[in-house]
Structures are given as structure tokens and as C-alpha cells.
Amino acid sequence: MSSRLENTKVAARYAKALFESVQQTGEVDRVHEELRAVSDLLMQVPEMGAFLENPGVPQADKQQFIDEQFGPKVSVWVHRLLKLLVDNHRAGVIVTLVNQFTEFRNQAENSTTAEVITAVELEEELRTRIQKTLESTLGFSRVDLQNRVDPGLLGGAIIKIQDRVIDGSYMGRLEALRKQVETL
Image (cartoon, rainbow, N blue to C red; front, side):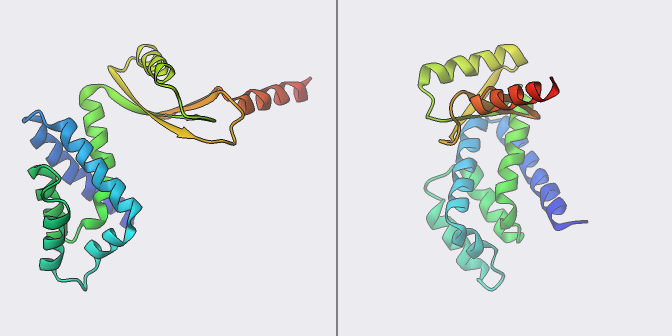
């Protein structure tokens, strides 16, 4: 079995156990936000992840690091999870675990995340209109939008939601027009 596939399975088991535990307490959204913050931090500061995964660093030092860096800032759920992952030499699955947790949350709440790529940052009113349109059109109770700015886009937007891509960009329209002209 490939290491990546194994890590995904391990992350899914931890994520499911955590999700089922916090679902009973009503703290799913809080834990989700904390997990995303930890994941974002580890991606922004890869040295942190390297430290936690380094077999040459004593476990006690890693535990102290988690206590100092995360203990006062996160819920007991996330704090315990981080310590458990370090204890079990699984710190490398944190980012994948967050993605798995998000999937469990989305399934339970009939929600999803959509990435909207635009040339400039979306204004709040337009962001809300896109969100409501996606929810009603695709039947989700909630769609969380993530706006990514790509100045190379001339205008319009590209929306990626689950396995769908809706290309409403000017570049996409021009490409479709070019293909139509070529078939004439």
C-alpha cells in the first residue's frame, strides 16, 4: 500500500473518531475552525511540521511544544488530538485529517465548499449572491465560499465545487468561441 493512501486512511480514522465525538457536544464548527487554523499554520511554517515529525526529537519535547503553542489557543478536543498524533508518530497526517474532518462535517450538514476564482476580490454582496445561487441550484443547505484572486483572469469567474467546474471567465468564453469558429 502506498504511503499516501495509508496516510489518507489513517487520517480518515482519526477524523471520523473526532467528528463523532464532537458532534455529540455541538462543537463541530469550533473544532473545524481550530483544525483549519492548525493546518494553515503547519503549511505556512513547514518547520513546525518537520519538528513534530522528526524521530530524532524526544517525544517529551514535542508534547511540550504542543502544550505551549496550541494548548491555550485551542479546545481540549484539538489539543488532545495533536498530542495523540504526536504520541502515535502520526503528526504528518494533520493536513489530510483536516480535509477528512471537513468531508464528514459537510456530509452531515449537506454542505460543501466552493472555490471562486476571480480577477479581483469579491465584494460581500456578490459573494452572498453567488453563495445563495449555488445553494439553491445545487441543493446544498450551505456552501462555504473561498475566493481566490487570479489577476491573470480578465474578468468573470471560475467556480470549482466538488467535481464540477463552472467556467464563466472571459478567457473561458473566448476559448469556447475559438472552438466554435474552428468547427465552421
